[in-house]
Amino acid sequence: MRQIVLDTETTGLEPQEGHRIIEIGCVEVIDRRLTGNNFHQYLQPDRQIDAGAIEVHGITNEFLRDKQRFSDVAEDFLSYVSGAELIIHNAAFDVGFLDHELGLWRKHATGIAELCKVTDTLKMAREMHPGQRNSLDALCKRYDVDNSKRDLHGALLDAEILADVYLAMTGGQESLQLGGPGSIQTGPRQFEAVRRLPADRPRLRIVRANENEAAAHQARLEAIDKSSGGQCVWLNTSGQSSVGSGQ
Image (cartoon, rainbow, N blue to C red; front, top):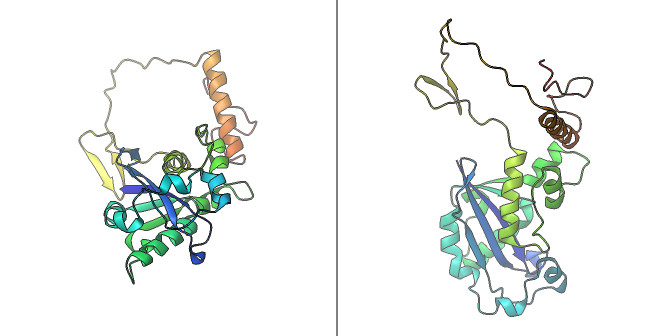
């Protein structure tokens, strides 16, 4: 499964008003692992950047003066993303700008959504956390993702942060396969065939959590409970974990 976490920075808010993309940042994820095979380009937009946009991302007209244009990198970009699933926060914004750039580059160009599956993490977050703030910064706080370097928006940095957030949002067991012989394939998940243990095997040693480990475990469960709106299944009805109690 190949996924591309994507973000853009632009000269303004509306492509219909002639605004352009000035930075594309993409992070490749294969089988839930960041590969390091990223795509990153600053782009000369052939127009002035709005002052309000510069305050957000810090990219200036002077900095972009000698950069390539979208038409110079379009083929490489399409080759990189085609067929992948794009993971984008507020996808309508970035896809709208990408389709606008593609249309300027080539008349009747195929839209991004026809080349790739598009997953909007903002939509996902609103469904998972209704009524809560679901900006990228808010999700970083909710899922304990480090965004301390994010003083200004930047396409590659934001894509890297969003990759961590997306993996946290979609966490949980992906496969029960242990890699041994006799595994059973059932759709996307794999299950290990049952193995009978000998009756005369030694009894397993029980290692109980010490006081510090139990406290750290409880704190983690309470954080999960808070971020999930009280839906942590590992807490019992009294709100206390049974770790270290032998239950």
